[in-house]
Image 1 (cartoon, helix red, strand yellow):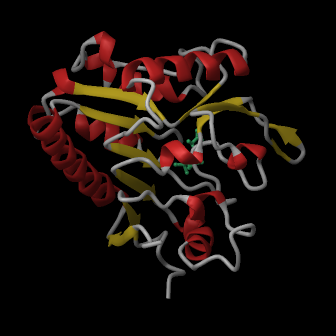
Image 2 (cartoon, protein in one colour):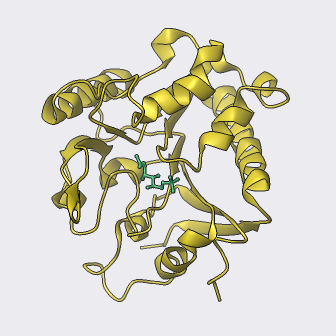
Amino acid sequence: MKPSMVDVEIISDAAALAEAAARRFVLWAQTAVADRGRFCVALSGGVTPHSLYALLCQPPHAGQVDWRHVHLFWGDERCVPPDHADSNFRAVREALLDRELLPGENIHRIPGELLPQQAADTYEQDLRRFFGGGDLPRFDLILLGLGDDGHTASLFPASPALLETQRWAVPVEHTVPPLPLVPRVTLTLPVLNAAGQVLFLVSGAGKASILARVLRPPDSMMESLPAQRIHPLPGRVTWLVDRAAASALK
Ligand code: 6PG
């Protein structure tokens, strides 16, 4: 099987990383809208993409995207209300949505206020309704981050969610000793690997060790970390990393 095309680009610092990501977002959005009449993107949680979201809602990038044809989804969500400090939706709403760039019907959030299984089921119904009941939803772009344990979206090492082959969205319980995390909902590997483009954003010296490990080929499939299991075909994976995060790369 031909491996996915993987590009790793080292960018000087976090601000330049956000700018490089914004330029790619705009290019992919323009191409998708021109070719298919819409741009379907699943956004990432975490802190790293906040500066990207802030750039996208202001000149020059905001005016370069035809937002009427952009549909926003989320790669994962914490099971909290949409106005909760931990909500991935809230982070995007504050940065991007409060400027009313997109029509409300183009925003497909994960209903974190529901119980985890209900939230996953409801989100999956929304996905199936939007993408049609086909074999998989084809996102034009999925943004992902990298956790310092190698997780991405809310797919954590050794999680049963990594073995899911049928569901498009599943609930996740995870404990980072000594505390359990807030339950989450995440897209599953088949969905992530059906994307046209996957863009990882990794910033900061704290990610240097895990990034070097993730970019090395795993010893075996079973030992591979979640972020090492992202290989969309025929899609492409782009890693935009700043110099601090890249400091342990050979
Ligand atoms: C989440 C994210 C998660 C995140 C990584 C990196 O909901 O927490 O989806 O996968 O992207 O943990 O987070 P930072 O960007 O904050 O380092």
